[in-house]
Image (cartoon, rainbow, N blue to C red; front, side, top):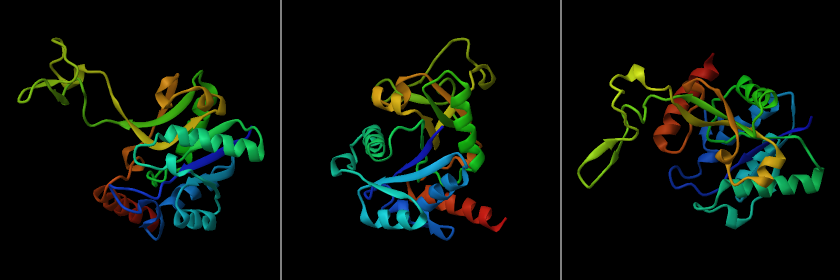
Length: 230
């Protein structure tokens, strides 16, 4: 079985400018994902899809092969799924067919090798199209999340007369960006991650930090520094 890792890193980021190469505990953010990919024995190649030459240089130095992402796939409104399809086509044209497509977003640097390996294994033993990663949610649409019914009034997102205690609601999870594992055939035929049969693994919250803002980065920096000192 051939397993390839993919990291998608645009140059533009409004929430946190240049976040993909900001130094986190001594190394560029994107290197954390590249290094984890290197630590998974099953992964034989690592690709970084980017529109940015500085990101490309950093990633290439860290050991990744660069896929030049077209500008139309690198805007704030572009679907990353289309970038997955573009990367898939690029790799198959250069290296031929492969079996597993593993996306390791640069914004989730605190994942462990075991998280990626668990996601790969879960897809292999489950009748599903894709394996995502989740973590326990602190809030629930059944209990403490609301939506506006009008300009001034709110309702619980999912209501039910029988739900009066937190213990009565189904357990819910947050989707994380720790890892996505799927197959080339699913990427070619689907419109997105959640359009098929989806399985998951649960990752502890401290390994599932997703960096989008400065606050996210500062929190990840705190955790990463603790991790490096161990």
